[in-house]
Length: 119
View 1 (cartoon, rainbow, N blue to C red):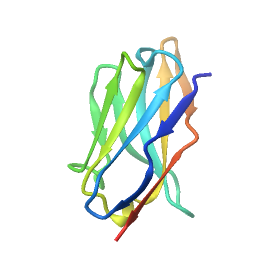
View 2: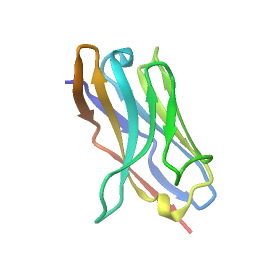
View 3: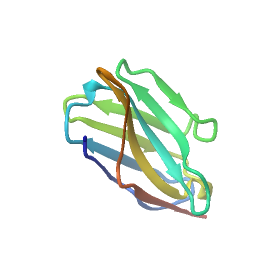
View 4: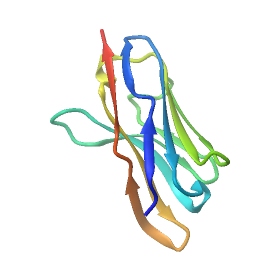
């Protein structure tokens, strides 16, 4: 099972920026999709952004224009640049990989990193 380690979370003021990193223990080129999810207390885990092996991206409407997902295939790391942060962005952010070569149903999660945005 791949190990995913998130970092970069912390406290930011509204309007500020943070960059999250997700380091994988193996080559991310074998995975179909890498994604960031977030979960606020008492709420369901929601999809934030995805990036495919080919580099295609998707963003939830709530973060479109503010967040950018990217990947470094050499460092085996996926990033989430978060700008113009809002208090409602406060959540635990999780890295996810879904599908890999010959195993389309493969799924793995990181342990999460807390992001807190103060108003």
